[in-house]
Image (cartoon, rainbow, N blue to C red; front, top):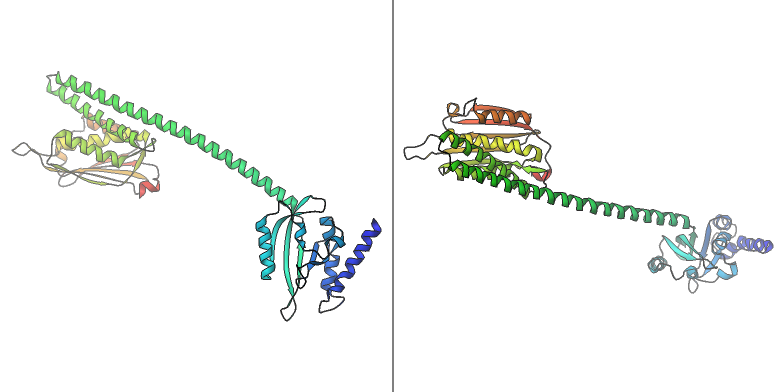
Length: 382
């Protein structure tokens, strides 16, 4: 067997001398492809079916064939049932178009085993541009392909696990959102029930001061009910769009007060706050608007009051700025420093680490509250 391999190697050494390249015998290109350990073949497109006219020893070791079994044959004999037809078509087009090409293709050895072949094909022409041969090199990249398949399989398993976990988290979030929506809905309903009880109780009380106190309490409860209604309608149960709340609140308060000649002027940027801040912010805005409705405007002889109440909300620098203004009687007509409403506003502002200032708007009064707030998402800033 050793003598046979030795004889074939000697044949390989001399075969390239028979290719009749223009440089003649001793061409260094021919010597290189004889001696290299990389699998190489040369085909002759001037013969029918572009047969193999040279195969070096490395090609024989890679494929398991004897030299006489490959010479004179088109190299498609390396293809098999699982060889990708698209890869074969790419090779055919490269040969027909006389262009270089490289491709990974599944090939078969003589014993039927498969290997992944990193195949490179290049046409060889003379100085006149006449096609003489096709040169092809082969490299067994089966290990690399197996590694790629393992990586792909691991990636698919990882992506599947991530997808399953994401679905679990989405389901849990949906369940949590549904639960919190239900909680907000029930809280809103309970607040409405409490409001109804207070309203019924107020009707039985003759003392005007007590009746007024219950009315003010009722207004605060209704403000909280409005806030919970907004939370219930929100997609993000952890945050409240305070501008939407303010729009609903002033509409509810103006309707409830019966003061149809007082107009609202709103300049509300979409600003969201966390659900934890929603209650104190809602109560502060309610107190300020209610105070303006009750004390800022003088009644006309016909019993009506006219004027404007403005609410402006923005977040220019990491602070939610709320301005409640009116064009009424001014600072002298506002609620006193010792009132429950004023003490409630100061207590809530302290809870929110907010700064609050009262200003003479000439005419009227402007109250400015600055509350530290989280950065806004793009959809809230748009």
